[in-house]
Amino acid sequence: MVFTAIAALALAIWLYLVCARGGFWLCRQRDDVLPWSPPTGAPPSWPSVTAVIPARNEAEGIADSIGSLARQDYPGPFSIVLVDDDSEDATAELARSAAAGLGSDRSFTLISSRGLASGWTGKLWAVRQGVEAANNAAQPPDYLLLTDADIVHTPDSVRALVARAEHGNYVLTSLMARLRCESGWERSHVPAFVYFFQMLYPFASVNDPKNATAGAAGGCMLVRADALKRAGGIESIRAALIDDCSLAEKMKAVGPIWLGLTNRVASIRRYDDFEEVRKMISRSAYAQLKYSPLLLAGVTLGMALTFLAGPLLALFGDGTARLLGLLTWILMAVSFQPMLRFYRMSPLWGLGLPAIAVVYMLYTLDSAYRYVRGQGGSWKGRAQANVSGS
Image (cartoon, rainbow, N blue to C red):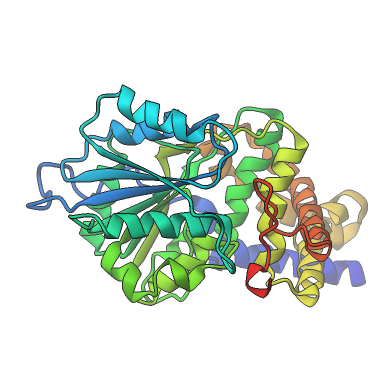
C-alpha cells in the first residue's frame, strides 16, 4: 500500500511536469525562424550594439570568439569591448591579434580589469567595467550584447537577436548557447543540463509577460541599454553567482524578455573529464537553493521521489506499484526526447535520465559541502559564493 502510494505520487509529479509546466520539455522556444526576414519588414534603421566580453584565462577560445563577432553581418553600428579580467595567460594578446588580423572595420576596445572590487563576483565586475566603457563612448549603444569568451556566433547572430528584440520590444533577448557535446562526459551531462534548466525556468513562462518566471542564459544576452539603467544596472546584481537569471529578474520588472534555444550561438568550452563537468554544475548549484540547508534537504528528497521512485518500483516492485512506476519511467524518458534530438543523441539516453539525475543530485550536495568549506562558487581560482558577506 505504501509503495503504491509513493508510485502514484511520483506519477502525479510527472503528469504535472509534462502537462502543466509550460511544455518545458518540448523545446519549442527557438530562434530558428526570424520574426521577419531582412530587408522585408526590417526596421528603418538598425540600432547600435556593443558586445561586452569578460575574459579570464580564456586563451584557448578567445580568438575564435572575437573572430566570430568581428565577422558579423550586422547592418548597423557594432563594436566590441573585451575586458581582460586579470588573466594569467595570453588572453589579451590573442584577442587583440584576432581582431586586427581580420581587418574588420568593427571597433575593438581592450580593457584591463582594475582588480576585483569588494562585494562583486569576478565576472560581474568585469562586465560592469565593459558596460561603463561602452556607455562612455562618443556614441553610447542602444543595445549591449553580454556574451562570454567561450562563445562563437554565426555571422547573422547579432542581426537575428536585434530583429527579435525590436519586433517584440524586448528589454532582454537571450539565447541558450548550444553547448559542446562531443566527449563522453559532455554527452552524459550536457543535454540533461539544458533539460533541467528548462524544467526550472520553462522558456514559455519566461517569455510570457504575465508570468513572473524570469530566466536567461549568460552566454548570450542582448540588453537594451536604457532598460538596464532603469533596472539598476549591473550593480544591482553585483554579488549574484547565478548572474544571468538574476539579471533576467531585474529586467523583467521593467519590460518583456525572451529566452530560447539556438544553433546560431555555440559554446566551444571543453568538458573532457569528470572534474570539468563537476565544476560546471556544482559551482552554482547550492546558490540556486539560496545556501539553505532546509532547501537542500527538501530538494534532495524531492529529486529522489521524482527521478528514483518510479524506476526503482518498476524494477523491484510488484502489482500496481510496478505498473505505476513503469508509466512514470516512460513519461520521464519521453520528456527527454526533444532535447536528445536537439543534441542529435540516441533516444535510449532517455532511459538513463534517472541515473543522470542522481549524479546531478550528488553535484548539488558537493556544492553545499564546498560552500561550507569556503570554496563555494569556485571559478578560475576564485571562490565567489556569498561574496556580499565577505
